[in-house]
Amino acid sequence: MSDGSQPVIEASELVKEYPEGSGVLRVLDGVDLSMQAGETLAVVGTSGSGKSTLLNLLGGLDSPTRGRVSVCGQVLDRQTERQRGRLRNRHMGFVYQFHHLLPEFTALENVAMPLLLGEMGIEELYARAEETLESVGLGKRLSHKPGALSGGERQRVAIARALVTRPSVVMADEPTGNLDERTARQVQDLMLELNQSFGCALLIVTHDLGFARRCGRQFELHEGRLHPLEHASLPQS
Image (cartoon, one colour):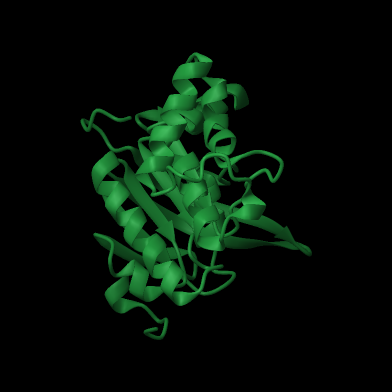
C-alpha cells in the first residue's frame, strides 16, 4: 500500500502503436494520468477506443511505444519482467469483466492465490483470504467452488482476490459488464465502498456512464486521448 506521499500510479505521454499493413495504427496518442491513494477514476469509451490497451500499459502487462508509467514511484520500463511481476503483486489488483476464477478451487483458495507469491505463512494467508471474503459478503461461501456461485458472487470473489494483497491501486476492466442491471449495481456499490474501507485507488474502465459518474473523476478516451467526461461524445445511458 502506498504511503500517500506520491501518486500510486502516474503515466506520462503514453503512446501505443501497432503495425497495420505498411503503416502503424496509433491507439494511444499522448495520454497523461495520475492517481493518488483512495481516489476513484473512470475511463469510458467506445469499443476499440483503446481502454483495455491503456489499462494493460498502466498495469505493466504491456509496454508503451513511447512514454512511461510509474507505480508508487517505480518506473515500469526500468524493471525486469520479474521485478514488474513483484510490483504488480504487491501494489496492484485486477478485476475483469469475466472473473477468471480457477474452477477446481474453492473461493477461499482462489482468493488466497496471490498471497502465495509473498512471504506469509499458510495459516496467515488463509486467514487474510477469509477476512477479505467476509468484507465482500461471502464469509459463508468460503468452501464453494465457482460453479456453485452466482454470477454476482463470482465477481465478488474476483474483487476479494484483487484486494487480498492490500494493493495501492485496483484496476477494473468492465467489472460489471457481464452482470444483469440489479447485480451490476450491487457490485458497483461494493467496489466503491471497498475503495473507502481499504484506502486503495480505484481505476475503472467501463462503457457504463452511470457507473463512471459515481467516481471522483471521469474521462473519455477518444481518438487516443483522454477528455473530461463532461465533453464526452458517448450517449448518456
